[in-house]
Length: 358
Image (cartoon, one colour):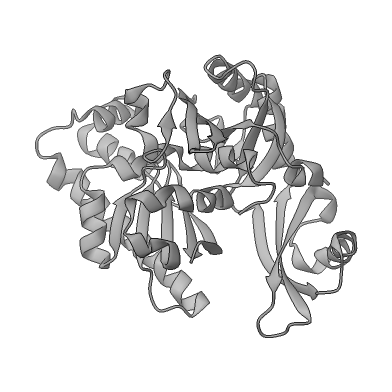
């Protein structure tokens, strides 16, 4: 069990998002006037070293993190990373309100065998006491998180190889939810009290996190991402993967690409997000989502904000997690333009100031 990695309150640390296409780093400091963005960095990832969110080549990723390490202050040694995917399980369970933390831990270990569909000797568990259950005041709601120990240890190892000491291994959807307050500056004034859905669309994975009045109430991830757009470009224009990625990012696609590849991808994107939101509404009993925040690399695809606002009928913004922060002198303006891609890393960096998940 790696509870210490989950629970120990971290010192100032860098949030490192180990993605399938890139590794991203965010370092924040916190003063009397709020957060300061101290470092924002990204390094490309070799293809194939992460498949379905699982690390396949620790040495290759360690080398990438090592290059990233040179861009982060040498005085900061601690790092937070995250796991996601089908081997990560989160559940709300109900326990006796009278139990203390140690008693809760013992009871959860006893009952975990029926809660987790993997052998317990292959799994790391963590839990967080939330609030008293509204329906039964004798019970407390407890957030149970479980991940394959192999996945956690792989991330710890790659951070170590890259020159960092892992202090927290989080869950990606929790990290995204933690950025809720950073997004409020770009939403209407009443957003703090409303239902806000953050949809982080990476290269291969989409994370949905929903907060109600600032309280995290739902998360889900699904296999879908911007790589599908890239593969459409490859297929339609007979490009290599690298050529398609470059053309997509640099706006160098043929004049008719809007009709040939962008519009079909827009259609799929709307379908995926509509389905994810509908699953949330159906399972939770809520009637609507008030605001939608889009992040990840796909948030930068042309026309996404306007498309989703029109098709879903939800006030939609592109994530700008650093817009209300002071910036250190060394922050690269070009990197800042890619801010929507840094939501997971930003949420992990916030663990410097919060001992728990949300």
